[in-house]
Length: 356
Image (cartoon, rainbow, N blue to C red; front, side):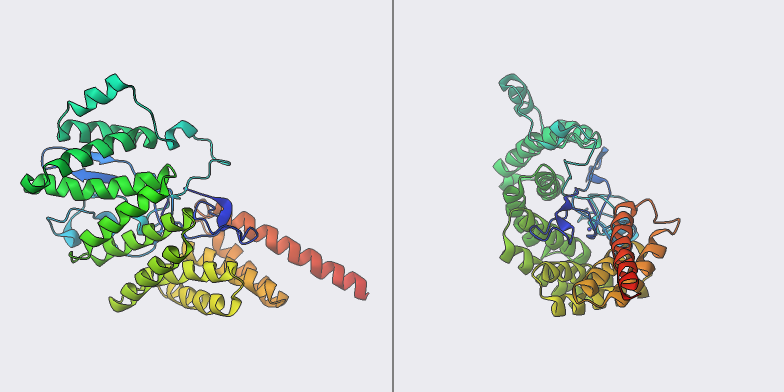
């Protein structure tokens, strides 16, 4: 959960509910992904271009923040960062090309020459993993995708004869490829892989990893304009979070559903879900997530013409957003809050002058 910003999440542009908007969406993530290799720990960078919760902008949940996706060891006590932790990172996973300063070529599928592809095909899995980690560390996501696909194809071709290490590589490759497809905008490809990742994780004991997969599947569905799938993944994730008493994830899914209903103009349902997410985030002192939820609640109050209530909530969100520990992370949200608050103050001043 953070991570990838489309200003489609902006409540003022409800035509598209997009985590790339980063307007006041949860941004569950900015963490590094890794292939855990017994011989080399190559770090795969995870500019997470959707979003984060536990220690970041979109990933505001679990102590699992610094552990990873290695299904062959004790996640609770390890210190490895095996993949991207959306819940505890701050990356926006749907990159805002319009407002970023990045080289956009890094976010488009790279077309290698025939000679280059033949060279990659001649290499073994370990060599390819080393190369793809270099690309991801440098955020060359467009170059990473074709190599990840080659790794996946090589492992699938010998699926019935894989040793334990390569079985782990296959699972991790699916996870990395699903993330990277989302980053470069190939959301339909991403969704298909998230389905496989979810199927694999349903048999594992790590519920946090499973909920992260549901969350990312929802984001990719949203970006692919598959509304029913988007809502379904969020609701399933919410149910599992409640079932396993994972409050931070529960609040995150509630927030995302609240934004969805907000944009559908179902303000009653949206308010109920926002109040639930705010209650949990306040209990867990998740300040970054609170800024986002307060923002939407205040905006909702505006729509209900409860201006004084809206003003108080905006002011509460603004004060929180100025705290040293989160002020840089929520800079975008703070600018939106200041804009809405200025509009309210102007309206109140005009009304006062008119009545005078």
